[in-house]
Length: 113
Length: 110
Image 1 (tube, chains in turn blue, purple):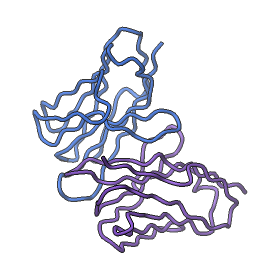
Image 2 (cartoon, one colour):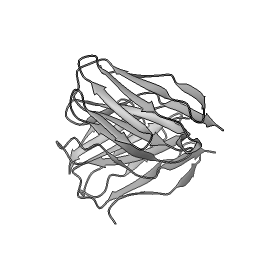
Image 3 (cartoon, chains in turn green, blue):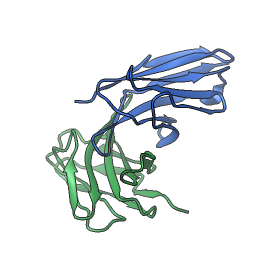
Image 4 (cartoon, chains in turn cyan, yellow):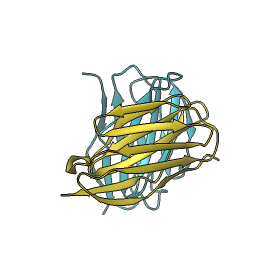
């Protein structure tokens, strides 16, 4: 079955550490996105990529980095520069130009300990 | 900058009642999406509205889009407990970016 797989489901980070969240899709979608969700709030865009080897900052990119070396994969690194990383992170993908909306992964809940 | 606002943000209602969630957005867009999120879960796509006057229905939920008024509504008919969730609208900005509303947390009581 086609879909988006995020791993791990839960992640704990010590202060000062970098951590990488995985996002893989087998939908053959061109575009991929990372969103952050804080408790009781909406989703805010971190980074997005419409083609391989290219990506753009979203609204809250500071303290995060991404790569897009393969169409299927769009990992997100939460760096030590991100001062408040505890949140729920959602990856999504879409076909560019078709207006069919996004398909979301199941999410990764990151907690700083 | 595109802003998307939903109201109400919290809604508690009884089973069997009808209610409407509103989604206003600040700049022109002809694509609007509704999603459902259960606690601790991901987002589930409900409706894709692609043109002015579009109306979609699925079970007890009906969504509509008025691009001239920059307004979408999600109407709940004869609510049942299973519809308790948080509902988000989202509007396309530029080529592909989705901007989300704050979400409406809906609680349906027996």
